[in-house]
Amino acid sequence: MRKGSTGSSTACRSGRKELLVIAPNWIGDVVMATPFLSVLRNENPDDFVTVLCREYVSELLLRCTYIDRLVTCGKGVPAAVRALRGGRPEGGWDAAFLLPMSFSTAIAVFLSGSSRRFGYRSGGREVLLTDPVSSELHRTIHLSEEYVRFARLYSATEASETPAPCVIPPYDWKERTGAFGLEGGYAVFAAGAAYGPAKVWPLDRFAVLAGRLREEKGLRTVTVGSGKERDYLDQITEANDDVLNLAGRSGIGDLMSVLRGADLVVGNDSGPVHVSAAMGVPTVSIFGSTSPVWTSPRGPRSSVVTSGAGCSPCFKRECPEGDTHCLQDIDVDDVFDAAIEIMREKIE
Image (tube, rainbow, N blue to C red; front, side, top):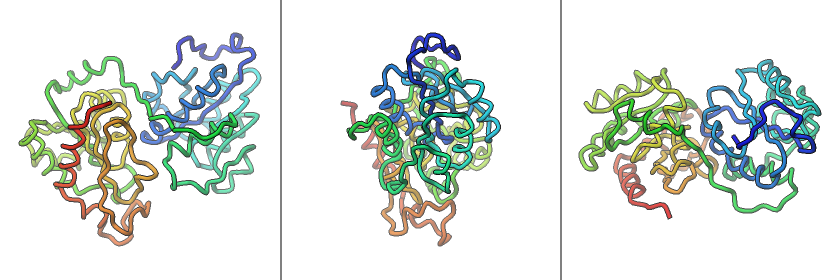
């Protein structure tokens, strides 16, 4: 958050407009929302920006310099309403920006009493918004650009280049990484995906890739994911003796630290690849049912591998044809070559 944040105090904010941002709920989407926060701050430098987010993604925004105050809440409308009422300034919010497209988010912000409420038309929720935005461009431009549109509309400014996402890891990230015994070169695999199996590259190919990176580049492999994915990711460990499975063993702060210290990150279209790319770590993302036009990780050393299958993107959680050709047609050589190339690139 910005230096000099005043928390819930309103006395020293007299004359400043109060802006409320409802952050997305997914890790990758939060990363892709940081360009919006950058534009909002730069175009409204004197306003006070409060961000409401779920507790488990708050670490991603904790050191964000575009924010004056970060408020966290639990899941559901009642929790969001309580958090908003507890952090509401004396005069209320002058404008609120709803980045999630859910109806429940619109209800929570409507009940907060914000004077203006920006959000995409979706599921009839425009009746709860004062400034509903057409969703005709949804999924046709990058998600970070979709978010930035809100700031442009509020500030009435012309479109310009969208800033790159920005993620700042914990300041003690080296110590945290060392605590896991990761002092030498290593690659991180984000081989799962909470969205569904239509986004998951075959695990046996991740296992083969781990062996090649060890043999040809001297990189140990670390796998990351949720506790529910731990047994699943153990299949990579069983095929390679020196793989470290950290699934379910680290919070977001430790995950950010492990990603920051990596020589390479390879993963499906999921949160970790967005985090690593934004931090400038060489990152290779594998896309199947989703669209890199919409959600490709952005960063100075980021690469995307797709098969070019005609059925992709379908945005389905499970393959309608039952075979995920979009992922099966990507072989280990495709990903290995992309990894070698992206590690060669230097940040300008």
